[in-house]
Image 1 (cartoon, rainbow, N blue to C red):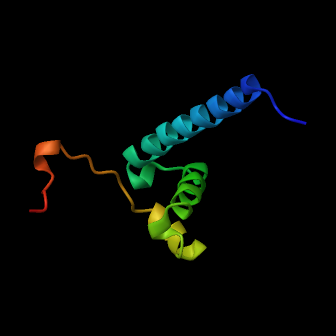
Image 2 (cartoon, helix red, strand yellow):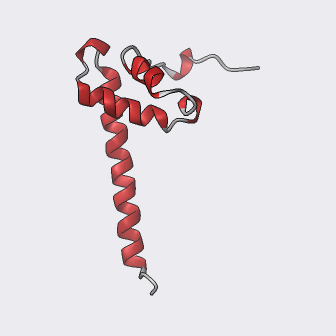
Length: 84
């Protein structure tokens, strides 16, 4: 059976919205002070970090410790160093 384009579009839209919601939730958790994060926040953050290639090789215990100290840092475009 072949799905019609409307079904494919709705699945795509759902995944896109879910990804946007995940990013918003992740940003909200990263904006918190580490000591303000609850157990659910730490688990969600650990799960998201484990899907980032740079952190994917880390053990669960290391990721768990990382979630207790990682914070977001925002830079203005003019503050970012450019390689020459």
